[in-house]
Image (cartoon, rainbow, N blue to C red; front, side, top):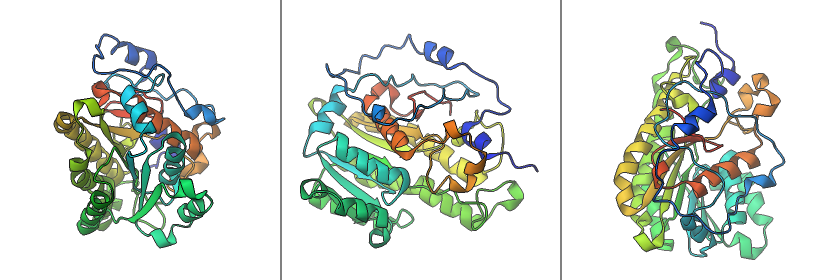
Length: 338
């Protein structure tokens, strides 16, 4: 079996039926977004990055959610970002997109940030960043230990957050694994390369970890109608789309992200009753350790700087409304098919 290039895996541009983005948006223009309200002075942040992204690649399949229009921050998000008591929880905070989200949240919000990683003592990038900050900013960040493969660790984190804040406004489930195909069994090029232990680990980190952390945190995310809404954002991947899979391979990774997408959709139906929105986010191919083993075949204009990715994903979170809750979206706010 010939192994497709990483560009194909991340962008899914080869061997797929092209669907124009414009027509995808028009298909949803008739939807009435009565649940969304916007601040009078929109504030977006991704413009700070000098990177100019290409048009998102076409996809196979039909999205069932409207696009997120990244042109105005909702009143709920605007109020949340200005609230000094708001609590933002980020997993995978030791490096990559997770670490950059800590930096971005410190800039765009005024609340508390809980940075979670498996081994805080060895998280050099995170520690160096925190120690470089003035006290009034570093005091906003609390570093907590979290092993997503360990249920006790998940429950202990939730208890510590409850004890410290008894509140979570945004949960960003960023941590995930892919493997390098060399020192790890995954990502697999074919079914004969499947490894049970690696597949279990992929599901534990990419699916079960985020879901059970969401379960533990959900009681602290309940909001009254006059308090706006909270958000659970799960970092997913476009390769988790079933209808858009035209290349094959990467079975454990694809399947774990497909499961995460399903859980995100299912949680949305339940958690809307407590004014918690959920969303699955595709970051695009970003220049992090996760993608480094595969970057050789990625076009320069499709390898996103991590500051661009983190800012755009948070823009999607800030601009989404109830009508977007449960959907799968890329960094541009475009709804993707499941």
